[in-house]
Length: 490
Image 1: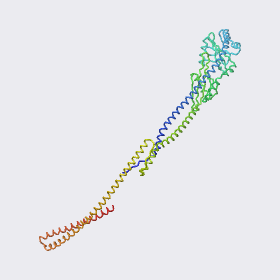
Image 2: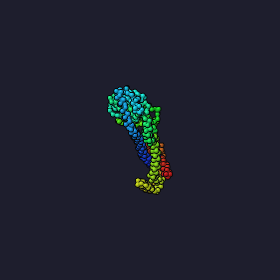
Image 3: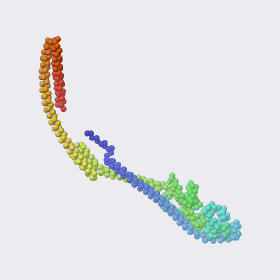
């Protein structure tokens, strides 16, 4: 019976077990790391967005706080502006309701030369003024402001305005409005004071906003624009035409807009701050342009990913080492069992099978020990059977030799008897043949001669039969000799 040896696997069992552990653990660790990276990335994005929202909320609050302070200062000038309309109304009545006949220069001098006079017609155009740069200006170019002054012109109350930048020169002025008695015109006073700059220097939008911006390192630049798109703070840029269009769009839509430049790593947000007040004609709303550096967040995210990658590699390395130790410990009983089985396979059936560890390995060792014991018993029985067969074989050979010798002796005696009988028969045949020849010579020509010849032919045939018997006997004797020789050699 041929025993086929199983092909040795390309890798040891320990390596297979190690690979199985790694294949089971590494995807889990990678999944955990991926989920953690996604969570951290989302938290980073949420923190960036929250920081941006807090900064912008703080900017809105600061701007409104500064504007509240400025509003308080502007309101302190309202009584003076209200009294200033007394001479204006008196001059309008003297001129018979015809602004062309009014002596505006004299009224300005009467007001101490500190206020300029403006007369706005029904079409929203400055028809008469003591400030030539603004003569002929059409307020329809600012539809919301035109609607507001039209509402004031059709009303009956004094309407103070805020201190705002003058359209032509940008000089700060405090304005106030009063409709004419016939509602055909709207009178406007503009108070220009150098003290405005000093008072307002104590309350600056930029300084208040800068304190909040400094807390957010992602902001690289801040600029503030008024409702007309005029830059209040900040440096000029080559692409100011495009940015100014975004400012005006944000003001027109009264919403916050943003433009992202992924190549430059910038995010520009145009933050609309609504500061409209129904008590004032001028809209003090602003648009704050904030330039965020998105590369910082991307750098943080990349650093976080690199850190997670490093942690993942270290975790995989630790898992590999621990898995190798675990695999080595788990396969130790198998290695011990393999060594014991190899010793048994080399013929040492008395080698003990010693396996410790888990219950399964102990049972396996006991099974192998039982198998070896059964093998030893089987081999003992085989040896006993082989010895018995050898004894039977020797006895059988002895008996065969004895019977062969007896048979040879019988054959030898039979051959001897046959030789003697053949010799005697041949002699008798020869004598009979001789007498037959003599009789045949005497009976030549007689009818009995024919019978005698037939008798002689019978004698001749008898001699041939004896000769054939002798030939067969000699052949059998030679074959028997060869067989005995072969049996002796075997």
